[in-house]
Length: 131
Image 1 (cartoon, one colour):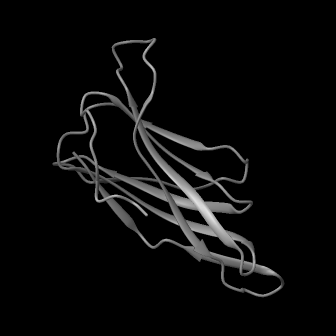
Image 2: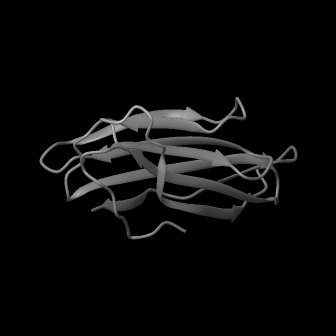
């Protein structure tokens, strides 16, 4: 479950990424809101290539910024699913700097039975404050 907020450095590169932790596929949409601007949408995208998807935003992300997402999951009917969402950062002035995780959490659920052995589920839109 997502935290209410993730503490970030507003002057660092910010990477938002999504990866499935169970053998399901995820369709998702992300939004980033910089204080004083409009929501910036990303997607819809998907994890069908079996790799985590990274979306890197350049600074600044000032206090009062927000991150939102919607995850749609599909796979075998009635199967439990897990998807990890991570926010990490690094200093853009140092090309050798490592990414530092600021927040990482797992969304979970159980797929419904949509017929023909398949199922779907979703998180609804989740918002996280960036401070």
